[in-house]
Figure 1 (cartoon, rainbow, N blue to C red):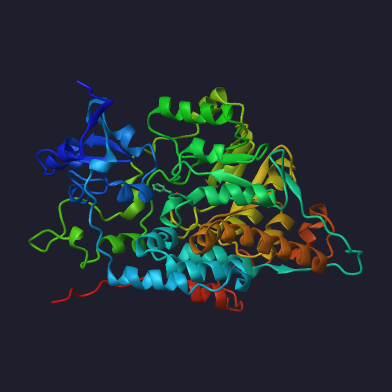
Figure 2 (tube, rainbow, N blue to C red):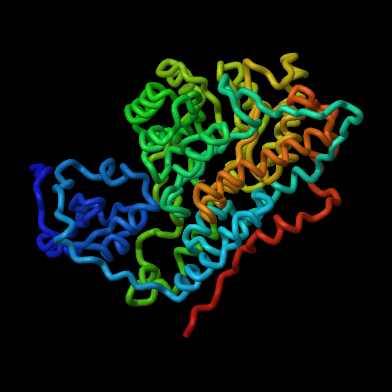
Length: 504
Ligand code: PPY
């Protein structure tokens, strides 16, 4: 029988501190997780560490806010606790954490940050290892991840001269919403891993700079909290992981529409999560007592998939083209497929009445050796012209690109080749991980400054004048061409590690 609403003392909770009866506290609520221990995607050990105690601090950064209530039955949600009666969990601060705290104090003034790479450099130094591993990791050997950035080096400009570029205007509209530049902040999960204000940093800086934020399904903040944080009239999109339970999906989509969301970006490249080995190796750190059993073997719980796999089991791998009609029947929001990687699928999306596609390989985190979005863009534009007589940009069907973007010149290349706008993900989470709201504010200002200068140097006064003839894309499909190395990017890239001998 449900006892929800019961006020429970910390003392009573503390008695349920074992595998036989395990209660935990999250945000002042008491949950009986005894029967859930072996189902917890992150393993039972981490829960048992907090048995009878307040687990909020551990829970918060790596779970979407409603994770616990969606996984537990009502009768397992026991009631509230008076937090004054709860004994504090002693947190041991590791040497690594102390060093990290010291580095936080050594961050350069934000005035010294010159470009988006700089945020990544600082974020790498101040993020927890867990957060850096989750944010920076990518699939398999991370070749696609690096290719995403490198692909832009195979595109070169053909600027025009002697045009009066006294004033330049790089504003645009994206799905009918005004945007100060052809950039949107794309969805990235678990913002609180990087900063306590997580995704809200993005919401607030987007409002200031007139750009659109795509709210992730797996945000650390709740969907409504992120929408509530928006300024009046601020436009937001929603990225959707489709839940196996269609009723839940329907509820999310219709609620988003009611709350004024302007575009539904359905992720289609993640029926299963890619292997992110940086993230996985983190979990197997032999010095972490949580990761080994008393016999020295890793426990029988699969923690090997890191933070991401732990929360991905709800995603429907059965999602298919037939489901599109259903989505179209439950919402009037524009529907965009996020994660399209060849022209055939882009054409299918067009033929089935979608309003666009994001040419993306999920930041290199899914299928290794999938091509960069910018390379796929060239293919899609060529084939749409050849097979449908359609040119881009096009108000009826939008092409978006994401992955590897660090400079306004990258965005301008994509726009010249036909993209409506470009999504930027990791650089924005690195910006708030390093400097909170001020970091995202600065990152967006840097992009604006880069746009202004590069529009002038290109000889384009508006984005309409950023045309395909301004880019030499003849090498885009050649994966081995000599290009100058990108020292800033390369110095931020952290090599993957090999297996190590254990300490004896
Ligand atoms: C990613 O990590 O690439 C994501 O898109 C977010 C995510 C996080 C956890 C499970 C599935 C997807």
